[in-house]
Length: 425
Image 1 (tube, one colour):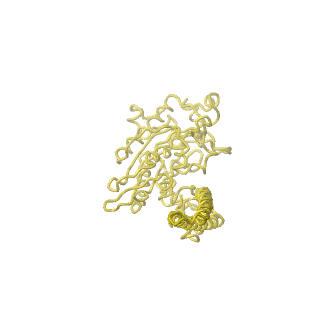
Image 2 (cartoon, helix red, strand yellow):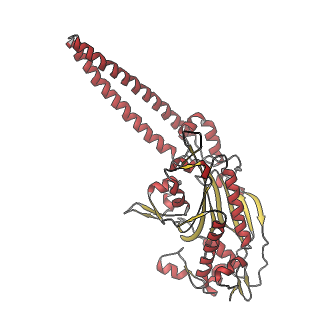
Image 3 (cartoon, one colour):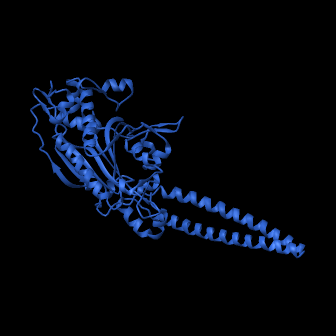
């Protein structure tokens, strides 16, 4: 979240920057400045009253020694009044702090200067493309038909067991899921990421730390009895490993990876664009997270973008990389690159990864800091994360792009993970 003093010192900058994200911050910023000013006044008044109370308390002792009982009585009455005023100031101060915190969490992260202006997805910038769009055989099918034809995924069985958006993977469908997960994890470990296996349920503090709460509570599955949330991405538990932690600057960047199932309500999603694997309530994903020095976090972002690019290239999928415009960015991100792969049978691009730098926004919420040698006071770190990769649309693209009259070809890098199987017949 944004630092309150930064907002007070740079109100027009905050308003101008957030306008790039299509967020009108003027009213909130104005209220923050008003409350911040009042809090300082209250603090000064309280300190003045405390100084008066100390002075009068000392005077009472001297008056007692001099036998001036009337003056002692009047002074004691004054101390009672001062104590009451001080309590009132302290209560007002605490109330202002609560109100400031409530306003503070309503403000999105400031976008990087690299973020293009724009209203939505149509204004995102294509910064790179790669791979060749395949020419499919006559009668080529979308992945949901192929999944049924080759007995890979049972969508109706998932509806029976749970509901729409919870498919059941079977046979080679389950094996290709496992192959992709293991391939992604092995690639991440080779790039220096430490693998962890996180919980799938997190508490409210964890959701707040990474910015899902209070912004996205309607998109998360919630267990009201224990007040726990099913994770929408492994980013949440993995980044919260570092909540309330001070790390050493010499250890940065800290690179972590995790596989998890992900759960999203996706309220309001319907229509042809959500058929098959295009949009699910439960799906698998391998996530990468970095904790970086503020001076080097954009180097880390480039490293992560290059790494995700290497994954889609190794899978042989046509792709493009988009720099998201302000109107299409998340609440927490300072700069985001989306990866899309070409779905040949659907003839459309499918998002498979978002790689983002959150700068200090999450770390401020998490109280995640780092200590540099020679400096007594720790500083706020930067956090980054990316999908590497989300499986459903990768599977959809593989099924559609790799279909032949003889069967579905397995990308070469996955053959060792498929027990040597090169084609699903």
